[in-house]
Length: 235
Length: 285
Ligand SMILES: Nc1ncnc2c1ncn2[C@@H]1O[C@H](COP(=O)(O)OP(=O)(O)O)[C@@H](O)[C@H]1O
Ligand SMILES: [Mg+2]
Image 1: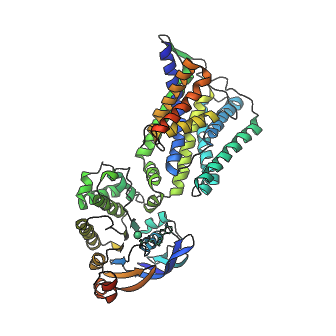
Image 2: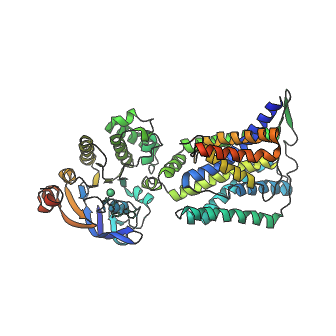
Image 3: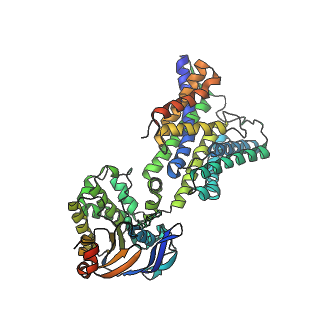
């Protein structure tokens, strides 16, 4: 479904991602894990078109997307839950969700999606007229996910959901992601610093160190590998 | 009674100031760009009305859609030719660019149409007035104020309710995230410049029957609009509206009780004072 090949990208012509290749197949939940500054956010921003690769290619459903502007990539079916949530704080919860469905023209379909999100996240229904900035971190994270789902994505990119959330909340949002993946059949590519949690729920994973992929395998394989045990789990 | 007369005059003038400032605050709030050519776009709309009147005998009210359309187009052209190139550059670049643009438009107008004052002689309203008790209200002034308030209301509704309006709000909060939603933010910028142009286009048309038309006609309006936007809070439409009325009142009361030479000085003094105590304006934090 998604094929990233020999990607090199960075800022102001200084590369921070070197020769990164990976794939995501339809229906999978994939985790890319790595510590702060490894380049996880940079990879996701490049997939959704906010950054342009220096070299390498990105294919989605057999089509090159690495030269398209971000607003066209959403239309193809890739939605992005950005790092740090970034809901539209001054807008109501409902308007945030409606922005998520910006690419959908049929008002009945938008209405149906809105109801679906309110069912999936009842908290959002209670708060629909409230400004998004007045909600707690966990609620904003839910809103950011729901907003991305409003676009009816085939592939969902999720950037560090766990950032700034209490452990209990982290489990809850990860559970939600797993549910979205299994019940709604949305393919998910998530990036995380919380190596253990992210690999536990993933079908497959990649380990990213300073802009390079150093290991890959099923979630279980990686969790049992010496590399992960030593470098990330402190065993 | 004199006091009421002065207050009313201030409110009427202030309403038009508000509309000009709304156009400026839209762009400012969205792109963090100060458009120094804002008042000069208004001057172009005044000339449009003047020429349509002189050459084709169009009443200013008939010209309204044409002059507003022309300034909307002008806004888009300014965005595409100038602003687009500097929007990501350091702040001073954009400042210099729109400042240069302002000089260019003024000089061009002077070259084409001379610096002379021109007047739109007749409109269906000219010379008409309403008398309530001792208070005299010129009909052109009243219509200019009501038209400006109506236009401000329409712009506010557009931003709040329509899909495009919401895309403008979203882009103002984060351009990248708006792009992730599928918003073509470059188009949003162009649309916002068009809206900004419509604001000055309508204001200029409403004023053209009251004030002389000349290349510097928009200059003071542009300047006052900065003051009003700063007072009202950047990007805040209703803030700009109330601040515009406030400046209109200040000007009228100051001009009457202190002398006309002080009327603008007082407006700028208020600005300096407010910014000392509320740097984000009266209505924004
Ligand atoms: N806007 C930026 N400008 C310059 N360098 C950046 C920018 N964003 C990130 N970087 C650098 O790129 C590298 C990867 O960052 P990032 O992708 O944010 O990592 P992660 O998401 O894994 O924490 C870091 O060294 C970081 O300092
Ligand atoms: Mg990151």
